[in-house]
Image 1 (tube, rainbow, N blue to C red):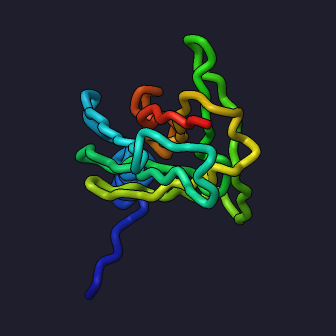
Image 2: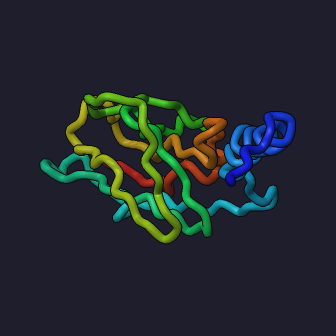
Length: 162
């Protein structure tokens, strides 16, 4: 005959299973070494452009050289254009529109290259000749929305001449 255990016998087992799912399992995906080194490369195809090059675009790629994924939040303005004015970088904003239902995360896996949104040299956002760069919002952690350090989220500077 099958003997059914009493509730007093099952209670500690049920509590153990409950704490395993509620406390331990959700915490597993957050565990990451504190000394994780992120390495993001944001590089334009060229370092010199001319406003006279009608139809030309500034193209760039975002490459994750880290051993862990990094994240971008969709939809939204994750890339902005900056211009150097004297010794300061001034954020000029975005040059593209976006439509989407979200938010949702896109992982840029280790070794993966992700194309940025091309900037037309005729875009109104370009404030004449000067030194420019792109700034991106790339996160190291989805759970905390933690951004990578700024030096990891800016492109190489590029010159736009008249």
